Length: 178
Ligand SMILES: O=P(O)(O)OC[C@H]1O[C@H](OP(=O)(O)OP(=O)(O)O)[C@H](O)[C@@H]1O
Ligand SMILES: Nc1nc2[nH]cnc2c(=O)[nH]1
Image 1 (cartoon, rainbow, N blue to C red):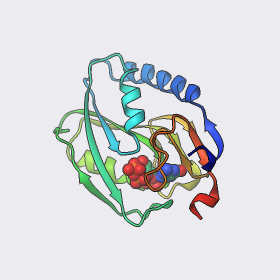
Image 2: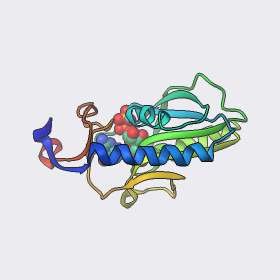
Image 3: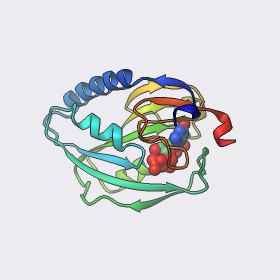
């Protein structure tokens, strides 16, 4: 896998420090609220499992899987729920955990969907934010790193289901996907 990486953008240590910082911020934000922390499968799984272990308050976890049509390295904007929550979000404080916001289309659909289910609040934490490519007006409430407009893999992020288990986040060599 290493030979396909052009450059390491965020090291394991940098990611770990940021996850701890976000965990502290979110523990304060959600103290006494027993939030429902939702992982958007599959990319957000490593971030979610590390993040909740840096949160020091009672919380619940659930998982959703969505699929964007026609996606390889670009979003199409059409989102379908492949696996729904097992928990009702009605009157719950919901925190959606994402690995990356790119066009924003996936999250804009998800936030809207969860708000319609009468959640008490819906907020978003993303590890990575790529604002250069936003197609909708969506800003995460909590964000780890803003990154440049490049295709990144590792720490949950894949290309064709590969590289999710890299412990760091790197920029993929364009020759791998072009
Ligand atoms: O802001 P957007 O342009 O909508 O892109 C962001 C979405 O793309 C990735 O998921 P992907 O559909 O690749 O699924 P995965 O998490 O299973 O890899 C990522 O995990 C976000 O959910
Ligand atoms: N793996 C990966 N998935 C994405 N989905 C949206 N942007 C990206 C990206 O840069 N890398």
